Length: 435
Ligand code: HEM
Image (cartoon, rainbow, N blue to C red):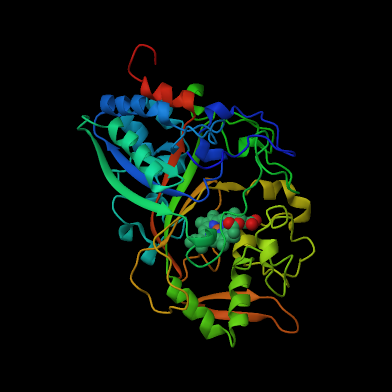
């Protein structure tokens, strides 16, 4: 492997109190940079064969304490839907102890999630939202060659197991400069998790591990007692997977129509997100972009909204302010902490060449892995049908953009459980005398 491994400790790291060797890497660690990868969805037609596949995969699953090792060709992460746990033969008492949202599945919660119209589950890609989705593998690698090596391991894990079928595959990869298809730097912010080890210490207080991982106290000092048994619960977590198609041409046309100059287009785009495309936050660079600030990880998250209570720098409805109000609620810091989740998303599809305003028909967008809670409407990801508004507070008169079109369409989604390593062994041994 040619890439230099990321050091496990550096000045200011958070001490490790979470059992990192038992937590899957995908939960706690950022994706490699640059990254290539693939999601593979499997269906288990026979519990015994499902467990055999799991036994074969187990040695290759990346944990949060060795994610940086140069000997790893890439990371393999594994997660199960409720249907998947059933298909593996998890006992009924355990199944019943899972949260209702997880047992119902994401498609059944379409009303609550505002997944209607073009975003409705009946318009999702097959097999999302059906009972065919059992196991999701996420493979991240630094290049195609390494990706091929891990895919081969995954293929061998179900070789000669005819009841295991691959029902979906999709490749993903980093776009130039680490941008998302709309042209914004992404993956800039994730909350620091208390006791989780390597992370650059910023100005933010770490969030209690129990907000993200089962088996640890949360922000209220409580430790989750479900699902049962404990072997299955410890060091596990839940993830909401959402695949979004992004209509980049529509986004560009909208900006063009609202603005009288390229500079104004950029400002409106920044107001919608809360950051300039370079990643520079509006609260720190309200009037013009500051690409150096955008690419400086020690500064590009060093802000709150406490001195912008009128939203004059960053509108309240800007994407990053809505999904993470930081300390803007002042006396409700604890409540804000409870809204955090970890984002482990990836982008897919080719970039739309600069300046193109007509859709080229290519599939492009992002797959979001959200570990934690939170689904709110905003100008980027809201289910806009052409009637939405977006307000930019400014002096002397605020500006209201009308007729917000749909830039983003849901292509599919699932709730999954990401077990810890011991839990995976417990699942793999179900039905045998050691279970
Ligand atoms: C296609 C859909 C989406 C697009 C285009 C998008 C875009 C972005 C961009 C450009 C940023 C700023 C850079 C960064 O910190 O990574 C960001 C941040 C963020 N997004 Fe999204 N996002 C999308 C969906 C979502 C969803 C579904 C959620 C969860 C509900 C979410 C939650 C967040 C959070 C928590 C941040 C960090 C906020 C902060 O800086 O404090 N995003 N997103």
